[in-house]
Length: 332
Image 1 (tube, rainbow, N blue to C red):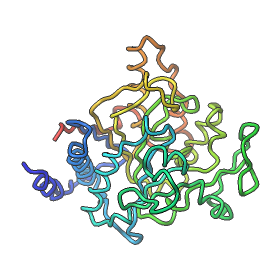
Image 2: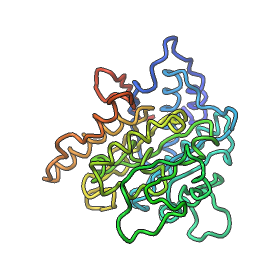
Image 3: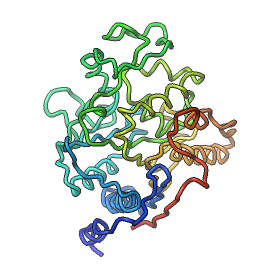
Image 4: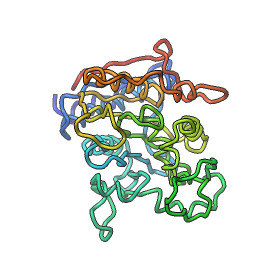
């Protein structure tokens, strides 16, 4: 079947009569490979399955804009795969978005350039293949006056860190773009281990990776889990988070999130869910399997972020198998 015909069949799939709670759904999509042509049908199938089972259409609304939150902090060696970004962008264009309405975003201008989402120099078009690219740290000073965008925590940056433009180093700034300027946003993290949360993946990208002045939490595991969960649960940010898509094309089992090629592993799998907790829980199993294979102790005990994600009034999503509907899709 041609790719075009495949897309037509998929987008014509009817919604289920009894929709599944998006946070109870996990889609595991096998990849034939890692090229643009192999990502495209796999992503389309994943999005179609998500829409069909949950009843949520990933189509334009009032803003006619969508955020694509990439992860670039580890540089080109361990960043969101560009074929995945292209495939998600193309699928959203087929659903009615314009290319210029897809906003690729992350925290730092420098790492977006190093990862290839921005050109090496700051003159000329600041876009990725027709989609605007924005860095939160450059926009944060203009947003800092809005109280709802200020996340305050008493942890201070490490000594010698440059002062923040808004004057109070105990304040991090949340992304106004994802609060007000998009219909929804899609989280496209990468997976590694990490000192702060144990698993540096979907939750980290949606929280610590979505704030200016979040580096202060990276060396503070005691505080980081609380911060990450609280930020993910902020209504203005959470309401727009439609979906996380994690590619296991490259993930790191030791020494992350700083890139170390010697500990990078690969699997032809996409994971998609509106529940970042189950994505990270599966990620923990992948990381520990890779560590055991390399004769390294697994991460144990289980990082506290998983318990914190469903404590008190906060419910980011379950990671209990009995609560999850797993849909496995073969490579197209």
